[in-house]
Length: 295
Image (tube, rainbow, N blue to C red):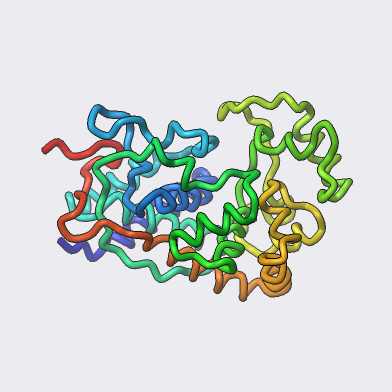
């Protein structure tokens, strides 16, 4: 059952993919979040539509903008060559996210392995578990609390928004007809330049987007919190963290101390990565992350 080089193989693949397509590192982090928040870190997110699994979770509105899944297939293939039918897709997702965080200048996370893979997709409930970009702070905190991540941990995990980008579709509500009053005026003007019309469509091919953090867009760092304090949060939920009494003290503390942010981020990511894993005889180790094994 063991595969001594598994973590090394994943790390090599993540590094290779990052050097070819830097944004893959961001994709792995988001993918782990979307997988773990819905019931369990069980790679249910990766399943394609089949008669047994139902509709893929990737079809959900909450998965809008997610990409690079084909590269997970490449990582899995490399691990299969090393150790056939040994390492689960759920573990590969977790390890890829950990290594992606490291590539993005984030903290190292002491993740454990041993998860097994779900045999079903949970498309029908994704929207109950994955917070939306314009949800209230209360909703977001309760979703994280449900998987054991406390308020401070939730503020730290949202620091993942210090990398990557947001499609105009998720932004225009803060820009039109008026720029949201909690947004710095100059930033609002910049974003209207990126998103020139309120009629942005939900289309992943649509390349109109804004970077989450214009200063250090490919570093997981506390610039995210410094931006919030300056009224330069991109999503409504981001900006509300700076004004809500439950979260504002953590925003200020993380804005002031990058090492502290990294510690809290690593701890919260670890907690999230261990949400109700399938173990023992539960689930299976999928041969192909996109499909359940044929019995």
